Image (cartoon, rainbow, N blue to C red; front, side, top):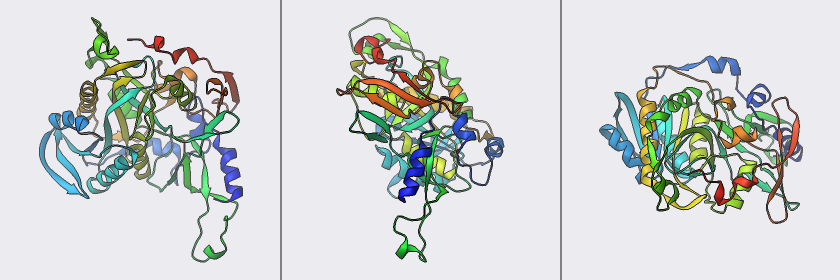
Length: 400
């Protein structure tokens, strides 16, 4: 990227918003198809529904729900073919971390021409109101590893994830941070240097990605089916009684990192408002957005930093699989290509309460405590406010 292009990207980048309409109506890329036209499109594909799991423990309840009729092997990945509730399904275990999920999803999409993809499995809570046994489905996915830490105790998103979009790609619901440099050609490569000062909308930097709105709406209808979670499971302590399990539409924070201290959770959430933390969601969403496949991430909560002794991976995997089964069973014959909206987030979601998904800048003390946060409103106004959520990043803030 040229120096001038970098400057333009930085200047245009800080457009995270409280409601994503600003990004959609402003600089979000839609190829040669307008955002309105894309929203009116519907998937008429007769292909199967794809389901991706990272871990064997997460794959097992999905396979148990399937009527498996066969399998195919591509590049080492075993794809199971079958049905759930009469709907054609292809299931694959990717292995853990973004890169594995990205490759498995690419193979799934290209070999089987799926009509929609679901990523199911487990995650850790990033919200004191979200307990072990709850389920979080993606309104949005963010890459919480995209952080630029400055020497003056401020943090900003780095540069987003670059995507080389086509007419089929769908990033119309994403926060777009800028565009990439005009690429060299064989004719000008020898003298390209930093390249020309202009940018091209073929290369898009996305700061988050939006799930398919119809899939989010279907999953939300399964909330009452989750039942209860014992307080012993939710807290890891010897307690009696049970609490209702909830299904929340939230933000999935994805990265190849495991973060335990609540102080670090606070710093990450101040920049990327997340409700569940895991390792595969952004890679999965990235491939599907690039190829134009509707997608949804479904995460059962297996652990919580507010309750360090709590862990139930099997319960979390089972509940995520049950929601996936419900989504497959209720998926319509045609799937509208509309993206999740900020207003679809649950009222308890961190982003809904903070009024943004991705902050423009986080101000910290020398010890790493969050002081202030800057974000952009739907009207395009930059707002800097005192961080109001510090009290939530203490063990006493848990709700189980």
